[in-house]
Amino acid sequence: MQLKDPTLLRQHAWIDGHWIEADDGSHFAVTNPADGSVLAQVPDLGARETRRAVAAANAALPAWRARTAKERAAVLRKWFELIMANQDDLAVLMTAEQGKPLAEARGEVAYGASFIEWFAEEGKRIYGDVIPSHGADKRIIVLKEPIGVVAAVTPWNFPIAMITRKAGPALAAGCTMVIKPAEDTPLSALALAVLAERAGLPAGVLNVVTTLKAPEVGGELTANPTVRKLSFTGSTEVGKLLMKQCAGTVKKVSLELGGNAPFIVFDDADLDAAVAGAMASKYRNAGQTCVCANRLLVQDGIYDAFAARLAEAVGQLKVGPGLSGEVQQGPLINDEAVAKVETLVADALAKGAGLACGGKRHALGGTFYEPTILTDVTPQMRVAREEIFGPVAPLFRFHTEDEAIRMANDTEFGLAAYFYASHIARIWRVAERLEYGIVGINEGIISTEVAPFGGVKESGIGREGSKYGIEDYVEMKYLCMGGI
Ligand code: ADP
Image (cartoon, rainbow, N blue to C red; front, side, top):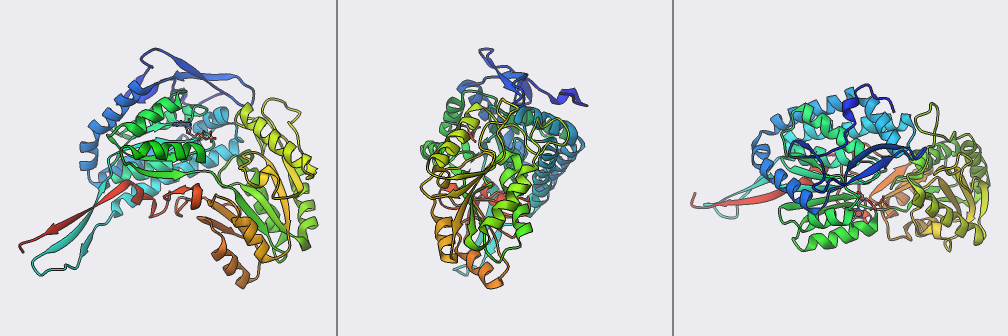
């Protein structure tokens, strides 16, 4: 791994403006999923160091929240510019620890940076209210104030963007933060901290706790009464656990959890567009995103044509180490991820699914898996219910619009859904009946900092990005002024 600026690679945690070791000196290795090589050793912090990080964030809070929004915006703008100026290095670092193709990593750096830029601007527009009073001698005012110290627990699939989506609005609103990045991808988080410091973010405003002991650190972050909000992106299972843990101190929570995205192709769809959308939605990041198409529901009349064209497109995907040139699919994040994909595919095949392509570990070995298409998939197979998080597209067949909607909504999840159709009445009907927070209509890529991202049902609480995203980081205070 070659960086133009080697100082972006840090092997310490970042607390209160200092690069620190664990109290007991312990470390853990960060590895490259493409070849298993060790990239770095980072400190394995525990509850004690986490408490110190929370205390540092709390100490930094009064001065940070007292700055004007414009002053905070200037620091965030600088941070955004530094992230973009270091896009190449950040992409290399990300691909090295996460595995995604370099072009995707560069895209994520820009996408991640866009949240900092957006919220730098949006922070200036956290307007309060003056409410017409209920009494002639009274006045009613609503202030919006930063919620306080925020804890963020983030996943490995978007090592930068899942942090900046939280840090952007939190810092713009005047909150301070403790971030616990995923154990697989702490280097991107630490590089962000290097750039935040260079941008002029004061000590303690943003802290990064690296750890392999997620339950211990998560336990402290959720039990500590100083932390007023938890923002979590990750699995539904861990999200539910953290939500329960936050109940003890009644923290505000934002959760961005699992999905089981349906991708519906109706008979009146533009087939080329549907195939292109499915490729982007399914195989991006090797299928490891929470908005990846998890179930492709295809209407009977075009099922065979769609399956054939998709197989042709998938057959052209180039698999390999993300750092090596023109690769479109990298390795999966770790052995556990490949094992899960193998189990799901085996279950589907055992229950009668067909294989249009792929279906096994890739000849490259390690955690590489072949881009795969399963056909004739039924609701009895595990892929119908579980998030695959790998490059496997299961194709289900349906006959009527009602049946498609029923199948699409038959899940406890409700993050993203997609459909391809051309009749305008159908487009409205289907868009309204899908029980999802995000609906892609004739579009497979829906993520952008200007739109509200988030799910309904067990996919989460709250929205990230857009003018709504900052609301999760402010509290309302109602002033009732009497005697006027
Ligand atoms: P994934 O399946 O995507 O790895 P996880 O929910 O396991 O999703 O991980 C998302 C984040 O949650 C990671 O930062 C991980 O370390 C963290 N995490 C996992 N278990 C816990 C826990 N018990 N307490 C706090 N954080 C946790």
